[in-house]
Length: 178
Ligand code: IMP
Ligand code: MG
Image 1 (cartoon, rainbow, N blue to C red):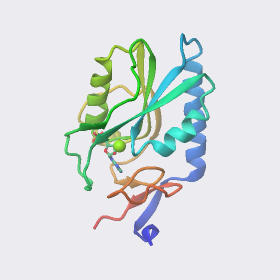
Image 2: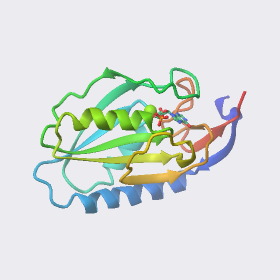
Image 3: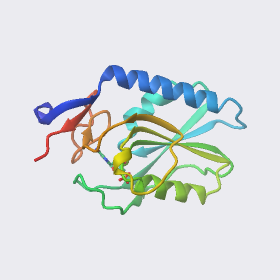
Image 4: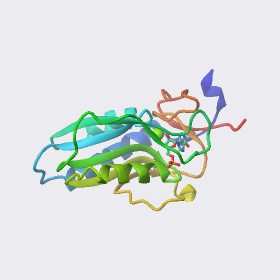
């Protein structure tokens, strides 16, 4: 069973619930005065579970869209190279955008996506991540809404994968190194 390779729990189901609730409240407070609906953009595939939970805790009108990037391949080391596999469906020009990521590690992915989206002239752009690895950071980026800081270990579960597996774990665990 895939659970056998999980050595410890990093973020329990209870902590996940509390974190998502806090983030939803923070985002809601920040976006009290919107001209149009908030556009919540999730980076696939890792953010799909977090997105689903988060939007239900955001109490302002919103729409969702998704973007798929190629990132790690099947390994656990960042290549630094990203490419847009599936772009957004809608234009973000003049819109208030909240970009949602599962985890910020080196920061390379987030920084590239932020730059790409800024070039499309949104009205505003803020960033939210469920997990953050501050010790792994190589590129300085601003995270406006940050979930849980974790140590520099490879995390799986709650949407995060190793070689596409483990996404369905209801908590975040650490994978035993090979
Ligand atoms: P970065 O560009 O190094 O910040 O990496 C960001 C992307 O790498 C995330 O969107 C994840 O897909 C992946 N990633 C980074 N660290 C982990 C991890 O611990 N577990 C699973 N995926 C990770
Ligand atoms: Mg990802």
